[in-house]
Image (cartoon, rainbow, N blue to C red; front, side, top):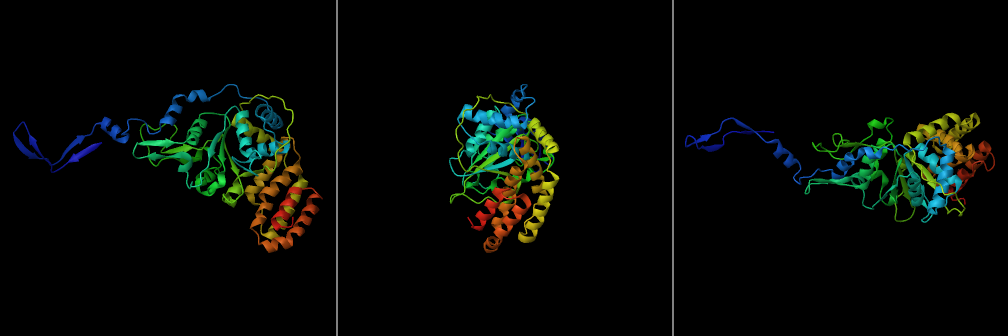
Length: 400
């Protein structure tokens, strides 16, 4: 750092006279510059720097090999019951695993006490990599509420557990789970906005999340110009209650997330005491890609979806869109690979992704046309072919 002094009067001890400086430049000591950068004498990202020091410990050698998606579902269901006394239906486990294969954002909905948080927690235990539970606060409005903030007084960054887990995940190949507990007690599209946008980018290396606006010499290794990479091996699972104390989740969030409704507790059953499985993220994604190639939609169901899309667009101005089409194709194939049936998967995702949008229609118009839509659904998919869809339509129309 160079400091120029012009017009300053000083006393010259050698000549015994006062001298006015005209153009004298002094070099400031680098040690002083560092001290001014961090007055507290410590690194501003102390927790992240500690993770740098033991980064090699996050690389494992004993990852599970040769598992199928069906085996993952069966083992996870048994692990939750046998080790944690948490019981879930086979269909819910399939929906959960298929949802993770489609999106890095999963929303668990249902009444309090149905096991929403427990399901996400149990999956972290099954993976041998405990989930990070983040209790959402009502006043949250921006990403700093999730990541932390720089304290001007201490000259240090207040790092949250989530920020440290994200940083750790970038050194690891394992699957990481973050639970946003009661995510809609604040407006999701406010505090989670940057995450939603970045997860839309097709290239994982371009998903750089802003942490601070500047760069210091002693910043952690993975912090590039104040940004951290949003880890590709981290999933965000939000639990949501629908009552007077919460906000409605916006269409923007619902479109990008997968949704699982937990309406009731499962019956207890005798389970095998399965062990935990360390699963690499890339192996899980590879299984999902293989399922999509092997269990693509049948031509018959492609035709049905095309006709349903035309009907919904004409009668209700609701269309699937490219994002929902991609989600349907992957979700159905993975659900089948998990041991389910094609029509069950179609019924589930159509109810959550397409029929749900009818709630934004004119109530009178929807009520008058709901039964016509249900009749059309039965014509396309057969009587009782997609019961979740018809039940959703009638519920939204107030006909049940």
